[in-house]
Image (cartoon, rainbow, N blue to C red; front, side, top):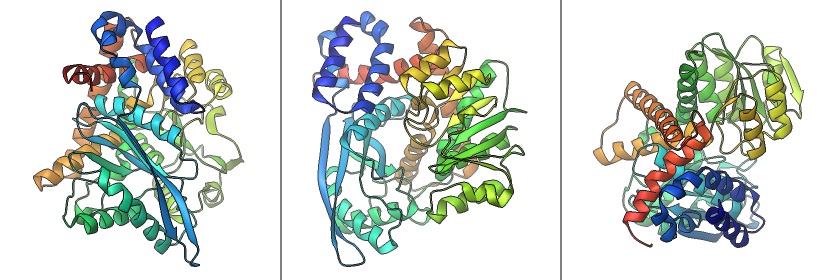
Length: 446
């Protein structure tokens, strides 16, 4: 890894104090060593150096006025990481933790994830350190309008197509798109995805990421001659991703026994199904960002300040946020005999945690492959907008299942071809990279 090691040195030098970005790039570069050896022309052209440098990084101020008439200022970001295979595509995140390093990490991951989907979309990510939680609808509207007043000049149906992410749901998407339409004076309904059904949105979009994660995990199980039937599953989070995952796992015969929030996690040995799944929607809509009320309502255990990875289950699927599974968590997973671990959130595990689980026989499904369902559905929304036509929920679900099945197969194929038989983490990195690299090389040194 002599050459790629120098690339990594430059990443650290150019992006100091950005550990999430360093971690994401290092994991990918370590996977690409045999690819680099096979393609010296890519090294000679500086392709790997360009791969880890965003095409464009945009930072801007977002001034707005709260309900008390006090002027507030937040910072907005958009990292357009790679557009070699199509217009930039990736979510907007509104959360106090947002900074340029996290946006770069997410944009880099999005580039490979979008490539894996097989759809013609590049990678981007953006957002703000604004916190919608606790804000009134009017405050959120004023913030979104100010945010879009700056962002609009950098996006468009053939340029960059944002979507929602943490803190950016249906309310925020509506305000953002409304301001975009107001400024542009045109109904460019392919410019933001995750829209409401009344103005160009797609069916099953809220649950698509969770559905996709479950379909991908089901392919892993099938590859081992197993299925979800009769298996217990630990899920973290309780937002859209976790909700969609719980729904589809239950539909496929599995039993989800945990969900979690910032306050801790609940353990429900009877399984989360029926009205309990519906209650997850109520929890999310309450704006309180806690899961303890679930335990109180359904009479199950709540573990304050804890994460669910010490629970004895068959499958683990973290669906909350990055960096929620460290080496100590991975040791608990292994000690409990878990054999299948799928990263539902974006990079929820440290590199050390993934390596430890793999060394001890756990099959790990990587986030960039497993949670591609959300962006895949967003791309299908773009298709529907361009056709002025809407597919049924059943048609979209079938398309999503096909996409996730192909991601699994292509990852397994890439892993095998480059000497990493059965390693889905490396396989996803290589499969996602190859399409982007071929497009970058064909387009010259840009």
